[in-house]
Image 1 (cartoon, rainbow over the protein chains, first blue to last red):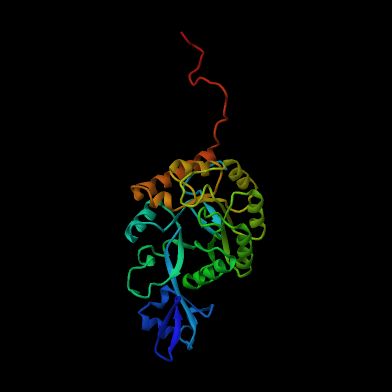
Image 2: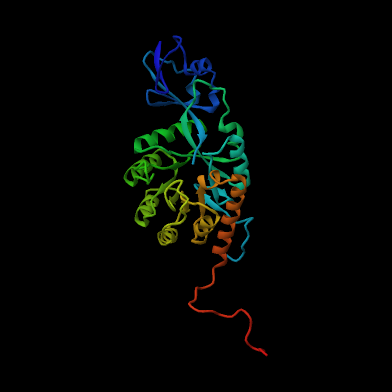
Amino acid sequence: MNITLNGDARAIPDGLSVEGLLAHLGIQSKKVAVERNLEIVPKSAFAATQIADGDRMEIVHFIGGG
Amino acid sequence: MNKIDTTTDSFVVAGQRFTSRLLVGTGKYKDFEETARAIDASGAEIVTVAVRRVNLSDPSQPMLVDFVDPKKYTYLPNTAGCYTADDAVRTLRLAREAGGWNLVKLEVLGDQKTLYPNIVETLKAAEALIKDKFDVMVYCTDDPIMCKRLEEIGCCAIMPLAAPIGSGLGIQNPVSIRIIVEQAKVPVLVDAGVGTASDAAIAMELGCDGVLMNTAIAAAKDPIKMARAMKLAVEGGRLAYLAGRMPRKMYADPSSPLAGLI
């Protein structure tokens, strides 16, 4: 299925949860926060939240800043 | 206050006690190693961090949290780069989810050239965040009326600029900073514009509870040395403030007694 991931169009396998998406991307889930269609996905809901075709996902983390 | 002791001198923000009055940013360093060493030399307990998209092309590259331990330092997520209240609130909700804490630094900018705060949007964002149970340390203009307003709506620290972000111009408006300090019941920290150690000392001598800086350390030729200079300047300025400076006089007053002069 096709989603928008951090602003870019991206094809991902069907049936992924947020947890599955992070694993698919090689991202450690404890270091990031995830937004799905402008709604925060709590870490506790990563496994239960299914991604749907057309979703807009944002994955962010902390970087150096002032 | 009779005892002046930097080992017990501390300030409280949103119920948390901190002994270092120097808060530092984590941006603009050569690499994460230098970031970590500079923070260590500064003695800071609170470090500001930005929230950005993960680099998906190389998710295994080192991350800030691998070098600056969030268990050792209090991460203060900021909203740098946000120009609307909505963007700032959205960013900090993500930050809270990423980190798991409520203490945040709100800054809503109004202009790319000056990076001056947009106070209308800042107020709007602060109200929304406080309603959503955030503890908001707010970056703002050095306008005493707006600072008072931000305190009244529930911000836990007021952080007026000394000069534009990254300018290194020092305290441009000491009178306003002093008025803001005198009227506030929450901590006041100078945030942005400090260039060198004397600027930080002046902020502290004016009675500020702390100073937040990034570029002054990161852009120094030797950031580690400057981090230590800033630590000493903040401590020196604080002690001078607590000690109470002598009055200014127009004319000289000899330090040696005149009695017994041959």
